[in-house]
Every structure is written in C-alpha cells, then in structure tokens.
Image (cartoon, rainbow over the protein chains, first blue to last red):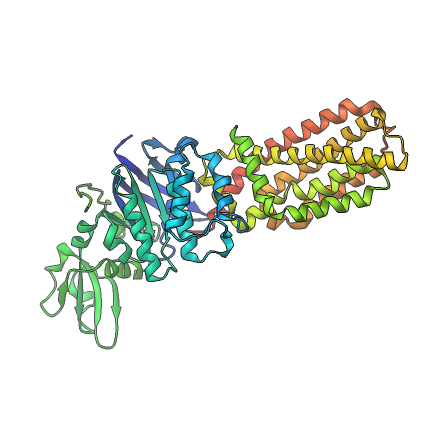
Amino acid sequence: MSSDLAFALRGVSAAAGNTFALRDVTFALPTGYVMGLIGANGAGKTTTIRCLLGMYPIDAGEIELLGHRAPEPVALRQDVGVVLDHTYLVGDWRLVEVERTLRPFYNRWDGARYRQLLDEFGLDPRAKVKDLSRGMAMKLMIAVALSHQARLLILDEPTSGLDPVSRDELIGIVGDFLLDEGHSVLFSTHITSDLDRIGDYLTILHGGRVVRTGTKDEILEAYRVVRGGPDDLDDRVGVELIGVRRTQTGAQALVRTEEADLLSGDVLVEPPTLEEIAVHIGARVPHRDPDHRADRRQPDSSMSARRVA
Amino acid sequence: MTTVARMAVLDLRTVWPYRYYSLAVFGLGVLVFASRPMWMVPGLVLLFTSQIAPYPFNVADKAGLETLYAVLPLSRRSVLYGHYAWATACFVVTATAGTALALAFARVQAVPLGDRTLVPMLTLSWALFAVNIAIQFPLLVRFGYTRVSVLGTTLPLAAVVGTVYKLQLNMASIQNWLPLLGAAGVAAIVVSAAVATTVDRRRVRYGRSVSST
C-alpha cells in the first residue's frame, strides 16, 4: 500500500446486470491534490465513486483508500467526506438536528466549526433540510464533510444545477479545504470549467473505461482539436478522429497530439480546452470491444504535477 | 455508546420529526383498549409498535438514508442490528407505558389486574412483537419500504393476530407456555437478524444503490 496516495483504483471492473458499468479502471491520486473525474452522463463517474466508497461491489481489481486496501476498515470513513449531487438527510431535520444526529458517529466532530460554516454559508440552523435550495443543500453537505475533519473529500457532481455564483462559492470552499497539504479531493463533474481553477489531475471516463488519466497539463497536451471544411475531416485523413462534429459549414474533431503532424495543411490544428476534450470524447459511441485503440491504451498515471498554489 | 446503539438513536432521530403522528397512533390504541385493560399491552404493541418500528425504513426510502448509512462510520451489521435494537426499544417503551395505562384503567374500572395477569400479558406481547418484527424486517431490508409497501407491514401483523385468534389464546391458556413464549420471541429476533444480514447482501448488489451510474 502506498501511504502517499489518497486513493487508487487498479484494474477495477464492476458489473451491472449483464454488462459492465466499469471495466479495467485504473487511476490514482497522490495525497494533497485535486482530481477531476470527467465524462458524459453514464460514463461511470458515479459508479466509480460508489466503488471507491464500498457502496458498489467490484468484480475485479483492487481499490486502495487512504493507505488501506478495500474493504477498508469502517473507521476509515471518519476521514472521508462525501458530497453527492443530492442530500441524503431527512428532509424534516433542521440543520441543528443534522449536527445532533451525525455528531455521535464522528470522533473528531467539531460543533463550533459546523456552526461557523453554517454562518459563513448563510444557512439558518433552524431551517429544514427540505427547504434549502440546491446550492444551500450542497453547502450543508460540505459543512458536514468539513466538520468531521475529513482528509479526503469526494464530491459527485456537486455543481450541476447550481447557478454561477453558487458554483464559484463552492469551488472557493474546496480551494480553502486544500490549504491543508494532507487534504485531497476527488471531484466528479461534467462542467469542466470547475476544474480549470482547482484541478491538478484529471481522469476522463467514457463507457465505463478510463480514456486518459494524468495531470491536467498532460491531458491538455495529449490532444489537439482540428477544424476544417465539411469534407476535410473524413476517413482519408489517415489519423483517428475522435468525436467528429459536423455542421453545414465545417467539421471539428479531436486528434492525439502525436498524430496531429500527419494532418494536411488544409485543417486548423489548435490546443483544446478541457471542455472540447470532454465534448469530443463524450460524443464517441462507446466502444466495448477490447481492440479499440483508446481501450488498449494504458492509462497514464504519472504523478509529476505539483499543486498550483 | 456502541455503533449499534448509535444506529438505534439514529432511527429515533429519523422518526422524531413525525412524533405527533406516532403519538396519535398511540392515543388511538389507548382509546381502543381502554375498556379492556388486560389487552392494553398486546394491543398497543401490535397496533403501535408494528407501525412505528418499521417507520425508519419508510423515511430512509424517501430521504435516501441508505447512502447516509454507507457514508457514516458504521458497518452494515451495525446498521441492521441497530434497526432491531430500535424496534426492541420501541417495544420496551410501549410495554412500559401500556402497563402503566393498563393498571390505571383497571383501577378506574375496578378490574383485577395482578401479577398473574401482567406477566402472561407482557410475555405474550413480547412474543407477538418479536414474530411480527421477525417477519417484517428481512422483507424491509431486502426490498425497502416502498416496494414492500403497506402489505409488508400489515400482512405479518394479520398473520400474527390470526394465529392468536385461531389458537384461542387467552391469559389462562398461556400460563404454562410463558418461558417458551419468551424464548421463542428471542429466537425469532435472532433468526430474523441473521436472515436480514443474508438478504442484505443481495440488496446491496442488486438494489437501488446500484441503479445509478
């Protein structure tokens, strides 16, 4: 076990009925960093998180969480804060009752911190959970996660459905959490702009497989976006075009950087944004055959990045 | 406090916002059995406990508390045993309050209600409660409250009441069976908890928790 890893998944596969929800998923996050988990709806982000939390059984592979191989000791959950895209508290509880209810389960529960966070987030302790807006509910879940002094924060699409102001606040809160070097974050989202600010590492999932994992810079460097006329991007270009999108006036696709030089001068080749990478990879029809190029690729899990202060 | 006890307290806090509904059910039971103090405790146990003990499953279904249980530092075994501890606590409170009320009503109505009646009454109540819960809980654990619905809580209750009626049970007829009834109740709970632990593994694998990707 590597104690310097916040978590690691190695060759994890998980079945869902007769198909695989995850297949041979491998990636890891060093302690002290933020990993963004991106992919379209149904890519396997939530399943990956559920496997990591032991809420979804795996059929193959190995999971390591905070230095313990799964199934990890139950006590390890003291160190993991979980924020999902929905609350999992009784709607009729008032926020003061949330604290009374959860406090007995956590050895390091800090009631003063909880009340301070409620105050900072503008949450009324007398309010009921069911009366909170979506943004407020997310803040409540983060307040809970931070009040038991978690070392690893796992957020599953916490920003989806939030207005830009709430999203910005939430990203700021996560940034503050990371001021402690022992803290790490796994942040699943399909809003890639969230990760522009705080993402150190990225893992791109598609069809239950890891398409690419590595530092944000490595992933941005791994692809190029190509633009051309409607007929410029077809099978004759000689390289694999990822997620081709055509309109009446032009076409756009993603290519691997090492193949970009093979393209003719008729097309425009540019560095992509995270959004473009996510969109083009998400636009691909999921390939389940093991011979697909992206599937054969060994996930790049080099850990050379340093967190950007 | 052990994790099982913490889980039982969590069940209490889960139903706490709905305490007025619980009190209404309890009050209804008291009214129904006010004229028959001897049957006050078995009646309250069947009417009140059979509705309130499974109520955390109902709230859990609506609020997604299975996710909370998975996130809290609690083993699945503690969660399941905590549900049984909560139900048993419900029985103890109901039996205690019911006994006090039965004695009060008996005194007002000048009905004799001594140890020879109270002990069989409480033992029978325990057995009825235990068999009812023993049937209900594995169903609730496996399928959840929503899928089991009202049938899952009323059918076991009807079966228990029907059995009592069929056997023509009364306080005199069960005098010789008290130790057996008490032990049968304990055995029913223990077996039920073991069954619930087994079926819970299937729920985790194929239940609601795996539906989302």
